[in-house]
Image (cartoon, one colour):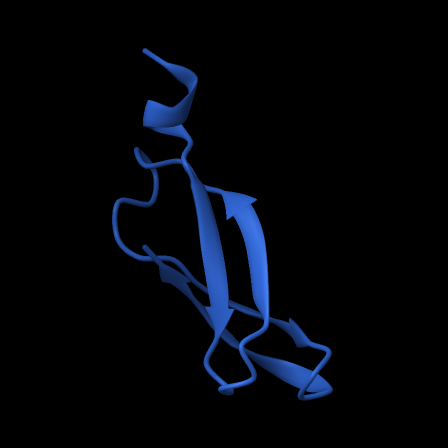
Length: 54
C-alpha cells in the first residue's frame, strides 16, 4: 500500500472564520469520517473547533 493511501495529509480549518489552518495526517482506517478537533486558534486567541477540509 502506498504511503499516501492509508495516511493522507489533511488540512484542519478553523470554524471561527479566521482562515487559520493546521496541517496533519490521519489514519483512514481508524477515522473514515471527517475529522473534528478542538485546537488553539492564535488569530482568535482562543480554542475553537477545527474541521477537516478536502
